[in-house]
Image: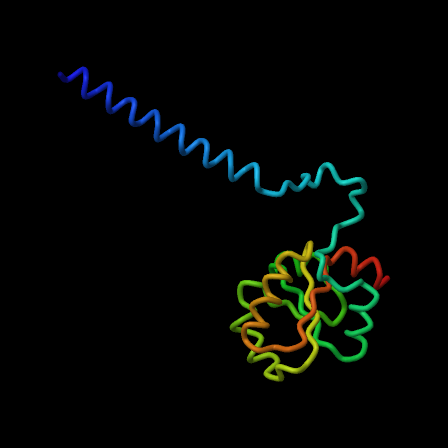
Length: 147
């Protein structure tokens, strides 16, 4: 009797494991794949997010009076940043920016290491009602254009 219960229990665990494995494999098959950075054709070229402005347009907006926010960490900012950039890490942008810039119609240009954190900060600021928040993409692309 005990052997029969154990066998039923083992079969049940096996079926559950197989179903869970199938769901994981199914989810993996649907997930888009992105090549690792080591497979990039040129290490100097950093891919910009789809909605990022070109470095030229981004810097033109800053020269015209847009607020330039570097949403990287303070350590990254200390290693190098664009002229006139203000460092507000993306995790703090929703609490710091309303005090720094209460005008929700002013153009704000965001950048980070790749554009991902700038995109997160952009979404958060748009939720707060900021109307002209622009993702400039990566620091390295902007820096190359600035020089």
